[in-house]
Length: 442
Image 1 (cartoon, helix red, strand yellow):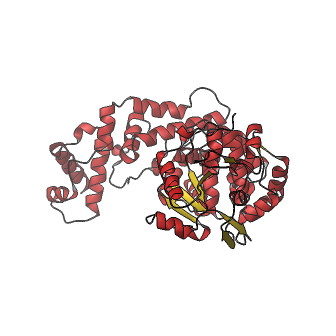
Image 2: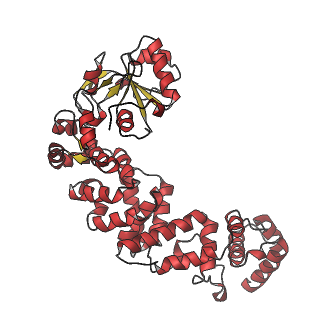
Image 3: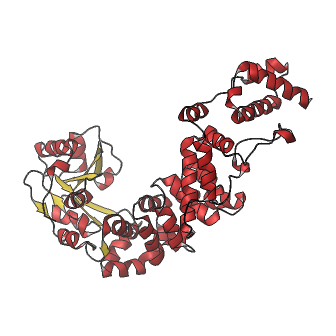
């Protein structure tokens, strides 16, 4: 690996911002993770430019920049963060410095960063690389070492502990012995970090190709007990399961809770996912989708009909849904959530099956695959966009009734009949079915 910056990896947007800063009297440097990634031969996804201008001077150059974090010298110009060179002191809230002073040198600015591989800067005009802490050497050795004393760095912001694990597993570093010692001594500080910030790091690990090692490391370093206790009993098996499915957050959370709670009651699953949602302040819709996948995750079982948004009061004993029919179940899932959800459920079941040490394809996956395989692409698209040929007002008119819950019962009944046989979805056919249902109900 050569200490060389491949300029083809730097987007025009970044170059243009650096040029404007230079033209306005600044000395811009591309810094941090973007330099690390370029030296590793990767294309960076995040870009930071450090400059020897105060934040208000940067804002004068880019008046439309976002100013979230400006008190710490940061403004956002498009997808690029422009940060004033600064020194910091007294991290009293375990995240933000209580003292910030601008106008320091680039070496002094790099001194406040977490790890040596992130403490490098490049002057895009002179081509000079600034590396006061031998980050390039550590990069070549694949060693993650801290800038200065790791105990101090973790005291300043305990989230750096999780960042260390993330860099180790997603980039492929070995932790320096002093960093390991500091992690073990400082891990309890993670309890003081907000759930939102912790989940940012957990998300990186959960979606990483190295998710197995990430999960195992969280457990072995004693971090899971603090940030993800769901791993504590079966870390290795959960790691296997997560690595066996696509890097999609919903799918992997479905696997996580399915492996642990798949055989539990719906109430137990609901409580567990709700606590997880509240811990990390996650979206309600994500939690509801995770609950559904976990409840139906048993690789040997069928789906739980009580997890579907349907009522039964409108059905006679002869009309009860045929949940052992794979095509009917596939139609139901596609109708309510789309084909993607059905494919996610198959993945969740098979991943858990693998983690159980089983080979071949799980019976529950075969059942669902038969269902989706019996539908053509055109049929799937029709089901995903299906609307009943009769609406509520038409039902009121046909039955000659006033608006009441009966209309909802009728719609649910017609929906059930159409999902059993989509060819029935026409006004004439549904009108006859509706009249027959009404006569039997009275």
